[in-house]
Length: 232
Image (cartoon, rainbow, N blue to C red; front, side):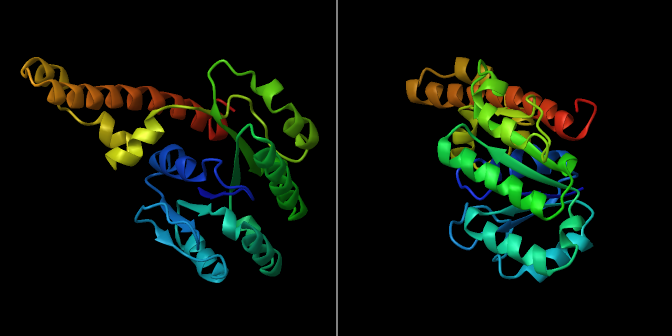
Protein backbone atom coordinates (compact mmCIF):
# COMPACT_ATOMS: atom_id res chain seq x y z
CA UNK A 1 0.00 0.00 0.00
CA UNK A 2 0.94 3.63 -0.51
CA UNK A 3 -0.37 5.87 2.26
CA UNK A 4 -0.14 9.58 3.09
CA UNK A 5 -0.61 10.57 6.74
CA UNK A 6 -1.78 14.15 6.71
CA UNK A 7 -3.37 16.93 8.73
CA UNK A 8 -2.97 20.71 8.64
CA UNK A 9 -2.63 20.56 12.41
CA UNK A 10 0.35 19.38 14.43
CA UNK A 11 0.25 17.28 17.59
CA UNK A 12 -2.35 14.83 16.31
CA UNK A 13 -0.06 11.78 16.30
CA UNK A 14 1.00 11.49 12.67
CA UNK A 15 4.38 10.00 13.59
CA UNK A 16 2.84 7.54 16.04
CA UNK A 17 0.44 6.36 13.36
CA UNK A 18 3.20 6.09 10.76
CA UNK A 19 5.76 4.33 12.96
CA UNK A 20 3.67 2.22 15.29
CA UNK A 21 0.31 1.58 13.59
CA UNK A 22 1.16 1.41 9.88
CA UNK A 23 4.80 0.49 9.31
CA UNK A 24 4.90 -2.81 11.27
CA UNK A 25 1.75 -4.02 9.46
CA UNK A 26 2.84 -2.94 5.96
CA UNK A 27 5.87 -5.17 5.41
CA UNK A 28 8.05 -2.71 7.33
CA UNK A 29 7.22 -0.04 4.75
CA UNK A 30 9.59 2.84 4.17
CA UNK A 31 8.57 6.07 5.91
CA UNK A 32 9.26 9.33 4.10
CA UNK A 33 9.03 12.12 6.66
CA UNK A 34 8.13 15.40 4.96
CA UNK A 35 9.17 17.89 7.60
CA UNK A 36 11.46 20.87 7.26
CA UNK A 37 11.14 22.28 10.78
CA UNK A 38 10.76 19.83 13.67
CA UNK A 39 12.90 16.69 13.54
CA UNK A 40 11.35 13.75 15.39
CA UNK A 41 14.73 12.21 16.11
CA UNK A 42 14.26 9.16 13.90
CA UNK A 43 16.50 8.05 11.05
CA UNK A 44 13.71 8.06 8.48
CA UNK A 45 14.49 9.84 5.23
CA UNK A 46 13.48 13.50 5.50
CA UNK A 47 12.49 15.51 2.43
CA UNK A 48 11.26 19.09 2.37
CA UNK A 49 7.79 19.73 1.04
CA UNK A 50 9.09 21.67 -1.96
CA UNK A 51 10.81 18.54 -3.24
CA UNK A 52 7.46 17.08 -4.22
CA UNK A 53 8.71 15.49 -7.44
CA UNK A 54 11.35 13.51 -5.54
CA UNK A 55 8.78 12.36 -3.03
CA UNK A 56 6.41 11.11 -5.70
CA UNK A 57 9.20 9.31 -7.54
CA UNK A 58 9.92 7.39 -4.34
CA UNK A 59 6.22 6.64 -3.91
CA UNK A 60 6.09 5.24 -7.44
CA UNK A 61 9.18 3.08 -6.96
CA UNK A 62 8.19 1.44 -3.68
CA UNK A 63 5.55 -1.25 -3.16
CA UNK A 64 4.85 -0.18 0.42
CA UNK A 65 5.45 3.38 1.52
CA UNK A 66 4.15 5.83 4.14
CA UNK A 67 4.50 9.56 3.55
CA UNK A 68 4.32 11.32 6.92
CA UNK A 69 3.57 14.96 6.06
CA UNK A 70 4.52 17.41 8.79
CA UNK A 71 2.12 20.27 9.53
CA UNK A 72 4.64 22.84 8.29
CA UNK A 73 4.58 21.27 4.82
CA UNK A 74 0.95 20.22 4.34
CA UNK A 75 -0.17 23.37 2.55
CA UNK A 76 2.72 23.20 0.08
CA UNK A 77 2.21 19.46 -0.41
CA UNK A 78 -1.46 20.04 -1.27
CA UNK A 79 -0.57 22.79 -3.73
CA UNK A 80 1.94 20.55 -5.48
CA UNK A 81 -0.61 17.77 -5.85
CA UNK A 82 -2.82 20.19 -7.76
CA UNK A 83 0.00 21.08 -10.18
CA UNK A 84 1.21 17.51 -10.71
CA UNK A 85 -1.84 16.17 -12.52
CA UNK A 86 -3.32 13.03 -10.96
CA UNK A 87 -0.45 12.65 -8.49
CA UNK A 88 -2.98 12.28 -5.68
CA UNK A 89 -4.07 9.00 -7.21
CA UNK A 90 -0.62 7.49 -6.56
CA UNK A 91 -1.77 7.07 -2.96
CA UNK A 92 -4.15 4.28 -2.05
CA UNK A 93 -5.27 6.06 1.11
CA UNK A 94 -4.97 9.33 2.98
CA UNK A 95 -4.98 8.78 6.75
CA UNK A 96 -6.15 11.84 8.71
CA UNK A 97 -5.46 11.57 12.45
CA UNK A 98 -7.39 13.81 14.80
CA UNK A 99 -7.75 14.52 18.51
CA UNK A 100 -10.52 16.11 20.56
CA UNK A 101 -9.24 19.69 20.70
CA UNK A 102 -10.91 22.66 18.96
CA UNK A 103 -7.98 23.73 16.76
CA UNK A 104 -7.15 20.18 15.70
CA UNK A 105 -10.79 19.43 14.90
CA UNK A 106 -11.05 22.57 12.78
CA UNK A 107 -7.81 21.72 10.96
CA UNK A 108 -8.98 18.15 10.43
CA UNK A 109 -12.14 19.39 8.74
CA UNK A 110 -10.05 21.70 6.54
CA UNK A 111 -7.77 18.80 5.61
CA UNK A 112 -10.70 16.60 4.63
CA UNK A 113 -12.23 19.40 2.56
CA UNK A 114 -8.93 19.99 0.74
CA UNK A 115 -8.63 16.29 -0.08
CA UNK A 116 -12.21 16.26 -1.29
CA UNK A 117 -11.40 19.21 -3.58
CA UNK A 118 -8.64 17.04 -5.05
CA UNK A 119 -11.34 14.52 -6.03
CA UNK A 120 -10.21 11.91 -3.51
CA UNK A 121 -13.00 9.41 -3.01
CA UNK A 122 -14.52 9.34 0.51
CA UNK A 123 -13.53 5.70 1.06
CA UNK A 124 -9.88 6.66 0.49
CA UNK A 125 -9.88 9.35 3.18
CA UNK A 126 -9.76 7.53 6.51
CA UNK A 127 -9.97 9.32 9.84
CA UNK A 128 -8.21 7.91 12.92
CA UNK A 129 -9.37 9.11 16.33
CA UNK A 130 -6.23 9.46 18.43
CA UNK A 131 -5.48 9.99 22.14
CA UNK A 132 -8.94 8.94 23.25
CA UNK A 133 -9.95 7.47 26.58
CA UNK A 134 -11.23 3.92 26.62
CA UNK A 135 -14.56 5.14 28.05
CA UNK A 136 -15.07 7.90 25.46
CA UNK A 137 -18.12 7.84 23.20
CA UNK A 138 -16.41 8.57 19.89
CA UNK A 139 -19.60 9.38 18.01
CA UNK A 140 -20.55 12.02 20.56
CA UNK A 141 -17.03 13.31 21.22
CA UNK A 142 -16.31 13.98 17.54
CA UNK A 143 -19.87 14.69 16.44
CA UNK A 144 -19.08 18.16 15.05
CA UNK A 145 -16.44 16.71 12.73
CA UNK A 146 -18.40 13.63 11.68
CA UNK A 147 -21.65 15.51 11.05
CA UNK A 148 -19.92 18.08 8.83
CA UNK A 149 -17.94 15.67 6.66
CA UNK A 150 -19.35 12.14 6.87
CA UNK A 151 -20.24 12.28 3.18
CA UNK A 152 -16.70 13.10 2.01
CA UNK A 153 -14.54 10.92 4.29
CA UNK A 154 -14.56 7.47 5.86
CA UNK A 155 -15.43 7.53 9.55
CA UNK A 156 -15.37 4.33 11.58
CA UNK A 157 -15.66 4.94 15.31
CA UNK A 158 -13.55 1.81 15.90
CA UNK A 159 -10.58 3.38 14.08
CA UNK A 160 -9.09 4.59 17.34
CA UNK A 161 -5.83 4.81 19.23
CA UNK A 162 -6.23 5.02 22.98
CA UNK A 163 -4.14 7.36 25.07
CA UNK A 164 -1.43 5.22 26.63
CA UNK A 165 1.69 5.85 28.68
CA UNK A 166 3.59 3.51 26.37
CA UNK A 167 3.97 6.16 23.67
CA UNK A 168 5.80 8.39 26.16
CA UNK A 169 7.96 5.52 27.34
CA UNK A 170 8.90 4.64 23.75
CA UNK A 171 10.77 7.94 23.44
CA UNK A 172 13.00 6.94 26.35
CA UNK A 173 13.38 3.30 25.29
CA UNK A 174 14.30 4.12 21.66
CA UNK A 175 12.77 0.78 20.71
CA UNK A 176 9.81 -0.26 18.61
CA UNK A 177 6.76 -1.95 20.09
CA UNK A 178 7.85 -5.18 18.40
CA UNK A 179 11.31 -4.90 19.99
CA UNK A 180 9.73 -4.63 23.41
CA UNK A 181 7.40 -7.58 22.85
CA UNK A 182 10.16 -9.80 21.48
CA UNK A 183 12.48 -9.08 24.39
CA UNK A 184 12.84 -12.52 26.04
CA UNK A 185 14.51 -11.21 29.20
CA UNK A 186 13.01 -12.84 32.30
CA UNK A 187 12.47 -9.64 34.26
CA UNK A 188 10.50 -11.38 37.03
CA UNK A 189 13.44 -13.68 37.75
CA UNK A 190 15.88 -10.78 37.66
CA UNK A 191 13.72 -8.79 40.09
CA UNK A 192 13.67 -11.72 42.52
CA UNK A 193 17.42 -12.20 42.24
CA UNK A 194 18.41 -8.76 43.53
CA UNK A 195 17.87 -6.85 46.74
CA UNK A 196 18.96 -3.54 45.21
CA UNK A 197 15.88 -1.29 45.35
CA UNK A 198 16.96 0.92 42.43
CA UNK A 199 17.69 -2.08 40.22
CA UNK A 200 14.38 -3.66 41.18
CA UNK A 201 12.57 -0.47 40.25
CA UNK A 202 14.33 -0.30 36.87
CA UNK A 203 13.56 -3.93 36.09
CA UNK A 204 9.94 -3.51 37.17
CA UNK A 205 9.66 -0.51 34.84
CA UNK A 206 10.98 -2.58 31.92
CA UNK A 207 8.55 -5.39 32.71
CA UNK A 208 5.66 -2.94 32.88
CA UNK A 209 6.70 -1.37 29.57
CA UNK A 210 6.75 -4.78 27.87
CA UNK A 211 3.27 -5.56 29.20
CA UNK A 212 1.99 -2.19 28.00
CA UNK A 213 3.50 -2.90 24.57
CA UNK A 214 1.70 -6.23 24.32
CA UNK A 215 -1.66 -4.61 25.07
CA UNK A 216 -1.13 -1.67 22.72
CA UNK A 217 -0.01 -3.98 19.91
CA UNK A 218 -3.26 -5.94 20.09
CA UNK A 219 -5.27 -2.71 20.05
CA UNK A 220 -3.33 -1.43 17.04
CA UNK A 221 -3.93 -4.75 15.25
CA UNK A 222 -7.65 -4.14 15.68
CA UNK A 223 -7.41 -0.57 14.44
CA UNK A 224 -5.44 -1.62 11.36
CA UNK A 225 -8.06 -4.30 10.61
CA UNK A 226 -10.82 -1.71 10.94
CA UNK A 227 -9.04 0.60 8.51
CA UNK A 228 -7.99 -1.91 5.87
CA UNK A 229 -9.27 -5.40 6.65
CA UNK A 230 -12.20 -7.47 7.77
CA UNK A 231 -12.99 -5.08 10.60
CA UNK A 232 -14.07 -2.36 8.18
